[in-house]
Length: 297
Image (cartoon, rainbow, N blue to C red):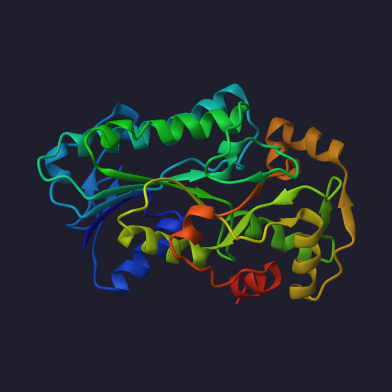
């Protein structure tokens, strides 16, 4: 297959490039800087620039671009960066693909379980659940809607609603490791908030499964069928690292330090991958302790 990837330099993009490259697929990166490889495709999503002729003849296009959601406080300026880095990129890709003569069979776009809102308590959430109306829910809804031009052009569009991706090479787990290795880790706030997680290996396997599952389109939750509480995740990480994990960070400390973005750590989102499992996908690391052990090998 010929596959184009936007966001190939990120944690998930890098893993997909390596996996699909090993399978013999031809991978092309969309790059903002001067192309470093002959297969690179230049674009400028902030200006809506992507030449449709450069996107002709691909079997699939994968859009993973987006500024780090937890990298800074959610000031009005930061919220605009988060929105533009997601909505503009998908919109630019979708419009270019819609203008192609030889269109790809599918467009696979990153999304997140944040579409259900920052805090849904113990509610069981599937792809049919209503989106949230807070900042996260609105952001993710706009992110997914940006692919509408490709949908209108009858391209199969899939939105990967990622849970917290566990990898020792990046993301939330990498940020947690220094504190937990010092024996200072523990639950955040009450620790009762549910966390929907997935290993990087299962993300890659799910993306490859979806690439070939022609009947799958629309939103797909990419999260383990076994979400856990923040306290359970903290204790499991302590056991894997053989460190105590009895500390607790009070909610007011996180709110003071992070502002509204503390919702990412204190909100409860209990998501289940109904559509993936119904399609026949099986997660390789369903329980949190084996997932953390695998991620930290």
